[in-house]
Image (tube, rainbow, N blue to C red):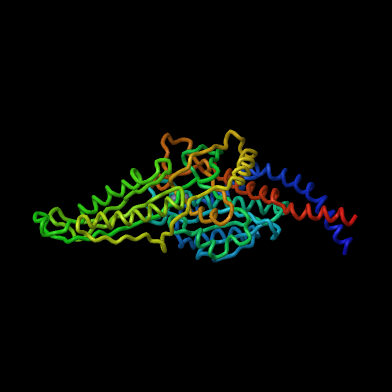
Length: 438
Ligand SMILES: [Zn+2]
Ligand SMILES: [Zn+2]
């Protein structure tokens, strides 16, 4: 037994420097590998196919099928269904450490206004947030990693999730066990305002926590010329909206960024009729859980209280079951160093940017709430365009030249993470025992 143990220890001792050399060499080549014509053409094809057939959250059946078909072709094993349409693939040894890379699959309920060969074929649905490219790049990374699987010192977990756009698909993936044994997770988002070949992020809070609310303010309808016989919900709702704006301007710490926006106001239908009720709805954002929960509580109090001043009743809903609150997206400080090193080596240090936090939100935050996570933006600016169409615009486009950069970043972040997170403790314990036995 002692000999077996000794051989095992010696193996560990001699293998690790040797393997790390070979993997580092391959690792540095992932961008040039990702830029191979055949791989790029395939990723572009995948992206366009998904772009033509956008599917909304939890309805990504064809997208999920396409992903599974490609994984089958590559010989990558996976679990499905997870969270209805989700797919979780595995590449590597099947042993720890485990590192995850993630893509979201869903489109938005909006009509595409871009006239091009691969325009959305599903009326009223569009990949205007680049999730089609996210899937193509994660599949690209899968291909790169599978081609280099012999050098992987652990297991890469591919997370294809449904319903990022408000549906909280990430939360359902976690509930279904997608992160079991996973030590860290990386995710990216396309950025139409950053040049291709650049990436940006920051350590700590990156994106805000977000929630939605809707309120029905009820009064008593009647003739618009005889207001004394009515209770006017339009005026009450107007005052509610003004009062809601005081939450950020008068109650929040000016150095603690928060947003309350009423984005929907529905009521009435005639010039001369006071309606029975008005519905308002909107979103709220904050950068800490405490600020977020405080804001939620005050939104409810202000709506009900201010409506009562105008003799109206109000009910407030936060849709916690269908539109779960997104936590703050917080980037691990350790993974920030890892990201900077990997991105610097792949893209050159001048193409790795720091950025300010954004009030936007991402359900990636559910992952980084549970395990160390890191989220970053990938430049997908369209070169010929003077003006930038933001994500969620019906005119949104992205530069497909960015696909190999995203694929290489995913693959390099994961492969090098495994390499640098080998069970060192075991090794040093082993070394100690080796000395004792000798
Ligand atoms: Zn989006
Ligand atoms: Zn998105």
